[in-house]
Length: 172
Image (cartoon, rainbow, N blue to C red; front, side, top):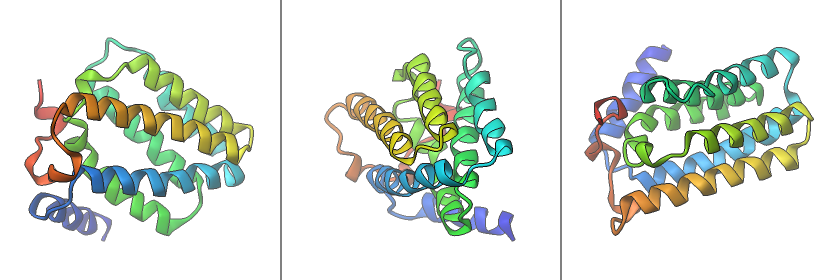
């Protein structure tokens, strides 16, 4: 059933009029709640799962697609640590669009900066501090928004549909 849902959501993104701005807004709102809940509800196993991609992503020589897979793993494990199946499902839908929305700006990212932002989110969750986790996540999202706007130059994220974007693995 999860595979069918995934296929349906991907088809909706590819055929519909979902914009980059739609994805960014949904991600910021939903994942903000996830990081706060994860800081309250995380287990030691969750912390290990969240830290693993942070540590592995410090290899900046790895292929960008592999690095982005670790990024997705990081954010997915936070959603699981929130212990809310509805938020996890909603974030799964958002994450399915990320290979396309990442193609807009992936080559402009400072990988070390993103990794340090992930580290800060992890540390706040590990400290069971929802306010610090939310602040660290907000800093991360603000950085990504700035890089995306710079990469888009004069294009408006509300006018770019996910369907019009290539998968990040297709971008050289």
